[in-house]
Length: 331
Image 1 (cartoon, one colour):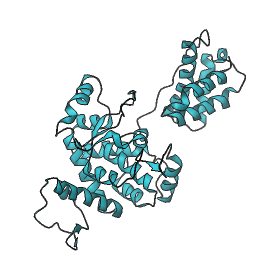
Image 2 (image 1 turned 120 degrees about the horizontal axis):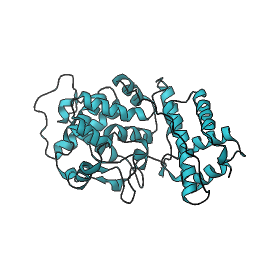
Image 3 (image 1 turned 90 degrees about the horizontal axis):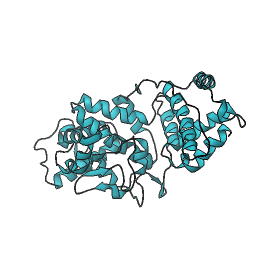
Image 4 (image 1 turned 90 degrees about the vertical axis):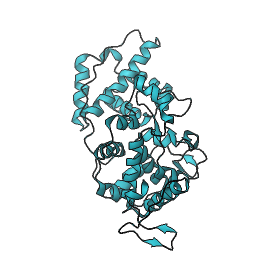
């Protein structure tokens, strides 16, 4: 069987329906480019695989990306064997992965990004990721039925979707994100364009990044890494950070998913730190300042005690709203 026939069948039957379909599609393109249309599965000797790995590395791809590309082919081959389409497949050796993504955004870079003109769906996407620490596909998939307003929770994994190794936890609904989501007209997905779900934000993100003159490594995943780094910097316990970004697995995760999420203190330090962080960023981001002010007003209406003294540097306009919100007001 030609190698491309195997991986094309995988794409049509499985790959195009995965959240990581963009990576799978690009990986299949690279497999086709190197192996051509006629080389067969028997050509996948150990030496040939090593040459393929060297070829991928010579194109400038990172070790982690090379591993993902080869992993797509490995999955396609194993899938064909399990379904009896081929009698046997060679062992595909995955190369060593690279180091963990080393970058996180500084406060100045986040302020620059948030102040760069962008469509509202991109503001929503960015805010969801900053307030939950979720992955990009979870932000794009978020729908109104996943938000429990009374319990102040977000189920990042919607009912009916099977959990994968990229675990989607239940996370707190922060005041800032709640205030923003209430302004979204989301018949289906919160991140939508003219009412239709957005499949990918890569092209739009790239344009925004270039307009903001941010470095090339400033990819969407930097938001998740920045959330984890900022929470640890603010003294949030490691287990809360792990629970927020979906690294808590096994029995502890099952307990959290079943009962602990209804505890008013569930990931409480992470929730407070996220709101304080976004309120701090809002000092230099006008549109976010309005969202933060709205979240504080909502908290006061729900029984939170307002500040009894004026905050230095704040300006009260017409006695109705606060022009500059400080972290102390989000308590």
